Image (cartoon, rainbow, N blue to C red):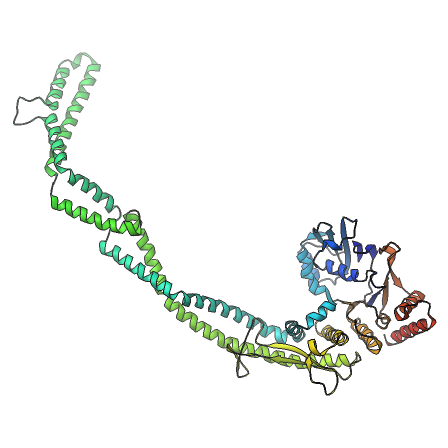
Length: 572
């Protein structure tokens, strides 16, 4: 990794061993920046406070060896990244204003892409991770991770049934709690539909009746007007001397016909006069028929007004006109059918819910059985590792318990509470010495014991679900003496199957490293390119002496340091 303008680091290159690398240095020298840098490369949160004062941005660049065809390589190539001779180049830039950019294999990618690849690349453990291990949920996750497919298979089936049960229960609760509202809505719809059905309106009927009512209400005036117009056009038979339009037009036509042969223009006018005469006769005939057909029956008018009143009652409630009322009735009938079908739906959902609860009980039982079997193996493996970490008499057990709940599912003949992860509560118990009662590690483990328990867990994981790189940030805090030597020895063992990077203050741990990096500040308080060095030979002895006694030139410390290195080399 190359780190620039991050915290106290001005510009430094960190070259890690493929095996075990120990990062050492004085307190405050910037060792933790190695962890922070790796965290940024793996999609960690970008804090602008990390940018070195006076710099515009902090940059971390890393070169990660990735086997061809590995899932990480495939996923990176899907994102458009290119491998460089079997290595994946990753960079992360954090500006002083808080903006963050990420590049993967020469291609700009979302920061979330780096986080997506992180789980496949590096397992990071610090003292905060120790605190996380105290939480029952994290302990359950650790057990599930160890169990692998034995738990993952039943868990996937359980999770699918759980999600379906939640969905069915939510829909059923909604239908049940709204039953009264739905019943009231259905009654109102039935009443309205019955009103509409009783009237039996036709589309456009309201407009037709309005026109008929207007005509019947003015029947006498309409008849008188039609008769007067007819008399004006066709004359009155009882008054042969009277003058009418038809007679006058006919006389005008005869006058023109007499001379039409002498002028084509006048002949055309004579033809038009003939058309007028025909039109007058037609209109006069229709007026006579209209007057004869017009019915001034008051009974019919009353019937029309009564029908209009019935239609008006509907339009006041259900629509602005009869067409809108009919549309409401059609929509309401569909809604009523839906509401009346809710009772059937409630029955179907109830049956499905009961069937899902029965299925979930079986799946929860299978999940519990798988976890219980894995817990025994996991506890035995961790206990064996603790024996190599200066805790030879300690014993770890893993309790897989359930909590009674009358609304839960059946597991082992009991009705117990259940959750998205199953019905189990997993707790890691530690008995540090013979005769001690197993207690939760949150209550029964000291800081040093907790560090060793977590390291033992990781060594066990390395044999079942290995990741390429493990990073430990001072997880050996609170440990010393023989226990520190054993931690170094077990980290060296872990490094045989994975890359291990440890930030440590313990010389007993650093002595087992394949490579030791020293982080040093310059006089101005910064770490420059020359501030991260690989220690070899005499320089490594001096650093181990400083870590042992605080005095690089102490002969006693030097002898002890050389002895540590010799012991580590003989065992590694």
